[in-house]
Image (cartoon, rainbow, N blue to C red):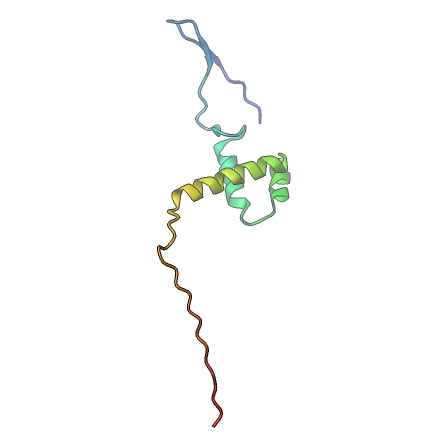
Length: 96
């Protein structure tokens, strides 16, 4: 998909910038929908299949999935228990 962004110039200061694209991913050069699709598909099929479907490199798919995992890990509260008790129960049969 190709899209030509409009260049905008500020009337006050004269600086130029590109128009904001809200549908474009902030981290990757793909749409937000494509990024969400990659996140959903990577748990079901290998990365190479997703890369072939979208005609991007496998490294891009790995990077998108890596960001997704980082977001999930940041949402989860990873508190370890203060005390960890391991008990081993042995049952012994006695012959009578």
